[in-house]
Image 1 (cartoon, rainbow, N blue to C red):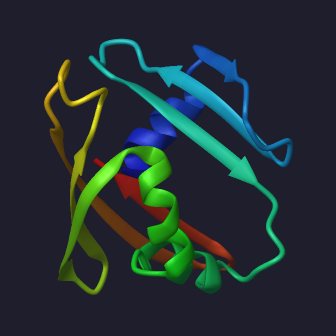
Image 2 (tube, helix red, strand yellow):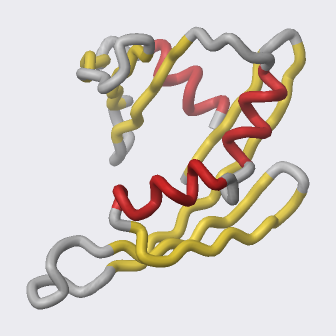
Length: 124
């Protein structure tokens, strides 16, 4: 993830995206020769990097669970792979049940703390 990020930072193919939060800067980048595009978000937070990582990886908080329904998540399972990674499995309702069937999503999240207030969180 870090190597890919560094390649993206060198790219001139950034597109600014509209963020729903005025405190968050969002960009989309496509690295030439790569089949995918990647989104980047930057924000200034009033919290330590350790608090941010803990909040991101603690998925069973009441407020996060309450938000699942708004994002059409019908069911969610999280499995710890290591002290620095988790596997997320969710089932989402994409439309009315008569038109589209529920879809399954898998996502792996990995984090690494580098010190000096810097951490990498990569989802694939």
